[in-house]
Length: 119
Image (tube, rainbow, N blue to C red; front, side):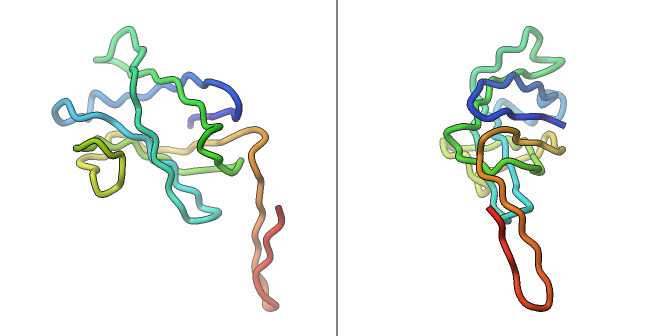
C-alpha cells in the first residue's frame, strides 16, 4: 500500500524493473472506486540507488486535485509520449493507495429513494 499526502512531496517506492519488458517508461494509474475514474501520472526521475532492486519516485498529488480516500493503483509501462491507458503495454505492479489530506472528501450511498452524495 502506498500513501500520498496532499500538499507535499511523497517518496514512493515500487519494484517495477523486475517485471519490465524493455526500456519503456512507467506511468501510475490511480483508479477511484468513488467516482469510477482513472488519473494517470508519468513516473520520471527515478531516485533509486539500485534500480535493479527497487524504483523510487517523488510524487506530489496536489496538482491532480484528487479526492481524499482509497484508490486502486497500477503501474504500467507505456509507449509514446502520452501516459494513457491506450498507450499501456504491460502492467508491472498493482495495489492499494490512500490519498490523505485536504482534498475534497465525498461519501455516496444509495437507497430506495435515490442516490445521495455528501461533500
